[in-house]
Image (cartoon, rainbow, N blue to C red):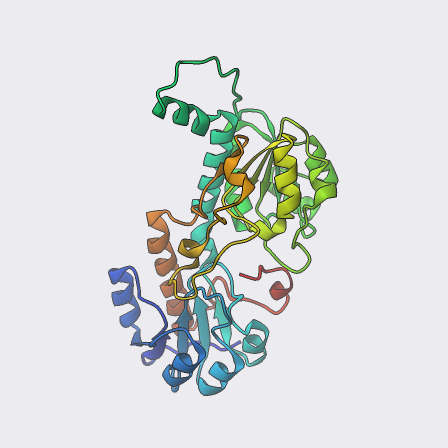
Length: 345
């Protein structure tokens, strides 16, 4: 892994606007900044010559390709402004001894808070009650709602978002089941959760939260068979990736009223290749049957839209580059081993 230097400013190419002016000023205090004309391969190739650092946003295509790396032969550190490295030739970057970082830790709390909000809104039926009041309906008897306190919550995936969600659930005195192929018993005890198999979690939890990264192994990890295990009074919450679930199988289960769901991500998500930030470019097809179901809460990939997130992610990526420049190891330096379980995005 390359190490930073402390005696002069490094040249850093930034392939997107810096949303926080004070962080741009902080970056300029130890780096000479050059803005790339775009994230397409040819623009980056023209921009990275002589640069030691490169910052790229999320893109639907692979932005940092082998050709970009060849043109940027002086590159020592590459950072992304989102929670992964999937739009870079990550393995090749590491093979060349270049440090690779991301802003995942800056995003996890916002997504965890949004996940908690969906849990509470689903249990207490808030969207339907609100809509009824807005439509001036008579005050009907809606039946009972549920509290979150002391319920059993299942969390699939135990990464940064899941760990923040676990902390947020503590005051509710929930019993928390967690499933991850990488979760050790000692780590589960430290987190205060019970490590269980996926089938047990799906069968026994009233609230099921997907916090899992999307990889080849986890794509459609919840299909017809797995969804069939979920209890009738359960709520399935997905703020991770839509493709973790077989969308058609999920739609059929929800149409049959087998359980409730709160979905912020979907199996088919249109992408705007020119969007600076991918969270703003995803949605749900207009003719999706999910839009007409009363047992589903739908939000447009909104877990990443907190105003604080822009500030946090730029604070984080600038600090990663400052650490590198001062000769210290950045906090999110990716290793070859981590690439095996990191998400595609």
